[in-house]
Image (cartoon, rainbow, N blue to C red):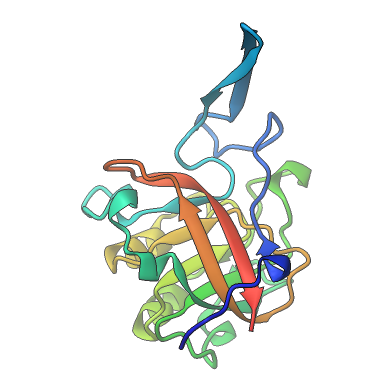
Length: 207
């Protein structure tokens, strides 16, 4: 299927990067140090490769080799389906059982909201291992979620299942005002050599 991109119809689902951007406990928070020299403003950016809205390359898992710069374009620009998982702390397999995912990105819309707005940012919705396995079986090419992680704080099961199947993961998406349904996903990570992850700019277009 061919898609015609209409810039005026694009939906930006990227969270802003600023001093308030939350970070995974123990990770490097985003910081921008700006200076003016000879009339020009320049900034030094300090952050984790998994800061803000970001992509986990399979190489985020130590046993995998596909890095950010190796992810093929058909995994970064592809049809996507947004599943409504609002009100669910654990996203179980029955929530995606009826979805057609072959060759598509699966984006999970939850009610967790921004970690920066939560009294306990580590209480968020996440994907069960059974649902992750089903997504792999159904042929999903990317998984995304609007929370800190596809896994709870004390587990890495979904990461191991998805990244082990060479499925990149998008985390900390901004889906608050996006309706469930079918879209074209466009994801643009930095081209970091041997990168385990990267901040991304992510857009959707409804079709």
